[in-house]
Structure formats: structure tokens, C-alpha cells
Amino acid sequence: LGVLILGLTLLASAVDRNNFKTCDQSSFC
Image 1 (cartoon, rainbow, N blue to C red):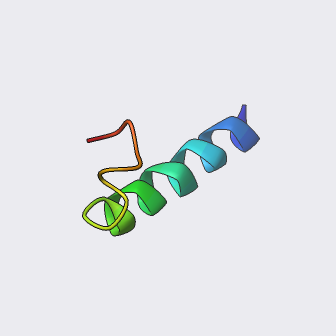
Image 2 (image 1 turned 90 degrees about the horizontal axis):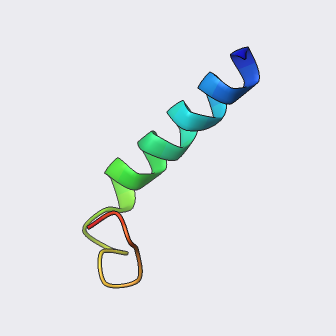
Image 3 (image 1 turned 60 degrees about the horizontal axis):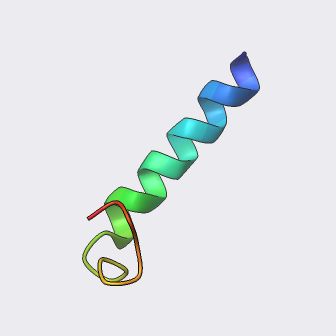
């Protein structure tokens, strides 16, 4: 459970930082 939360946290952080750069290549936009 802890590993899952950690993974989601890292993923969310990466998305927030690279949102504007990888917006066209990402489905998070």
C-alpha cells in the first residue's frame, strides 16, 4: 500500500512539473 502511494506521488509530481512540456504527448492534459 505504501509503495502504491509513493508511486502515485512521484507520478503526480512528474506530471505537475512536466505538464506544460509534455502536454501534447500526455493524456493528463
